[in-house]
Amino acid sequence: MHNHRLLEVGLGMIYRVALLIVLLVQSFLLQAQKAEFESISYLNKDGKSYTSYTNVNSDFPETYRYLEKGKSPLQYFLYVNPNDYIREPLENEFFDRLRFLSGANSIILNDTLTSKELTIDDNGVYTVRTDDKKNVDGHYGFFWEGRSLGFSHIALVWVLPDNFEILSYSCNRNGKWVERENSLSFFGKDVNDLVFEIKYRKKSSTPSTYLNRSVDVKKSINTSAENVELHLRDNSTEDGDIISVSLNGEWIVKGLRVTKAGATLNAKLSPGNNYLIMHAENEGSIPPNTAAIKISAEGLDEEIILSSSPNTSQAIELIRK
Figure (cartoon, rainbow, N blue to C red):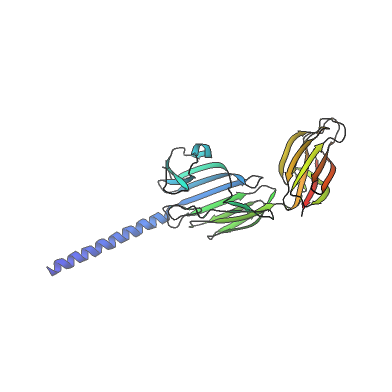
């Protein structure tokens, strides 16, 4: 009887050791599985809206994406591959889940940063921060389910328009940052629950070239006004001149025909330097293309005549103090 009991204990220990080995092997295989994520986001000139391409590539039989509650995949996504997926409601107030019966998927979407994701301070600094309060099963930010080490590899790229400059960037996880001109990249390995903070602002100096044309600053004006009124008119003979006008790299009017009666526009100035560029769309019947721009605000009432051609655009600097 005693020997029989020892045999039972011995077999039990062997079973538990074997089970532990199986679990360790399963855990090792799970962690060894590939879980790659790549994202490229192109920010628009308004600094708020963007187009994003994301790709998942893994060894897992299923992959997941998360969609804010109330949004329709058909309306929200521009492209989904594979287009066969299952929407699964989740018991949280933020997200539902899309389940793909595949280890890989790709998505393209257009979206706009919300007030919870983006803040703009009085100095015109834009701060984008990954929302770390919206969580799913304890995960937050950028995360991978089912693999405790998270992403085996992750690559995120942000491409800013030429009217913005990058100020700073940080992440709560270790990784490699690469900054190239107007793009910013982050590369990580075996990381999960990533939260990013990126700061950028509109460039403070008038560019020397714009749309492949040299830029000549006609005049600099100091003002304390945040909102100004622009009145554009033909200061000479109406000859069919057509212009476009941009403020800090964003069009405030395109394809405007310059007339004697003129047109009135409103513009909002950022703190510091603002540049107003007149871009000639043609030269009319009497080259070059000319227009008078009257700038009005509290304590400001000044008219400047700008001239532009297929090679050169003239600009006005408005310095808000």
